[in-house]
Image (cartoon, rainbow, N blue to C red; front, side, top):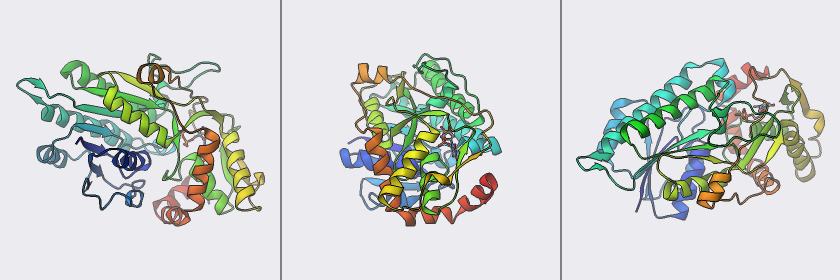
Length: 349
Ligand code: TYD
């Protein structure tokens, strides 16, 4: 029975991963999460009473707590999701991105190194998987794709902090031979995503008949992957990924912001509420340093690990919108918390 340490497991991708892996395999999961603004234990209702699951309310930057945890538990896999993840928040305030993303990652690396190394070298079948992002590559021109050898060139404080942490993971691999993998995934979407991100923000605003804020001309391109397909990719990389390697994860699903807004509005209009129309779309000032296009080549994942995304965007976006429409209480709980202030600060109402 594999023992996992999942960091940031109360967040969007982390909680989807925990639910996926616990249902699929007989594994033990310890989830450490500090329940900052986007961490939400509601996301883990399905597993909270499972005897193979344990939650620790704590910060990955807390040296004593993490050290104590590694003394108490023996982990086979560390899947490190915990991070400050929102570009717009990083533009507002850089410091937490450095603290959590860089120092937090260092703290985990250092403890994994100590825990997994003995007089015979590293214990076998251990792995530290760092969940990075395609955003570390920076902006991309038309017709090009990020591959694992594309130079890292982040352009905003969020992606710079992810790149910094990633380079430290690489250093632990090269210097101390810590068994690691790094994943760089494209934009995820699906249930439980915090509504500061594009798709749940659009759905939430449609529900409340609020303007749908589109940055700049709405032509920025993102490559969207359904969160479950990200989870299957991580599972395969943990088991079969070559130690020390970086893997790009994506599904060739390039859409402009405006494409997404039209899909969300049109689907809600057709299925749920005729009053939701494209008239809600409102152009607002562009994000500073806005990366125009991200697009990933998942060729290595496909060729070496035989991974394929299983959910088309057309299916996934409907599943996702239906989930939010059927979980409006979940959205309301968030909207009534810290989000209210954040939204006012950013969008003005
Ligand atoms: P986001 O979900 O923040 O992800 P990321 O910037 O990390 O890719 O944004 C996705 C795209 O949507 C990005 O091009 C910015 C755009 N966007 C808007 O146009 N309006 C919004 O209110 C938000 C949050 C994003």
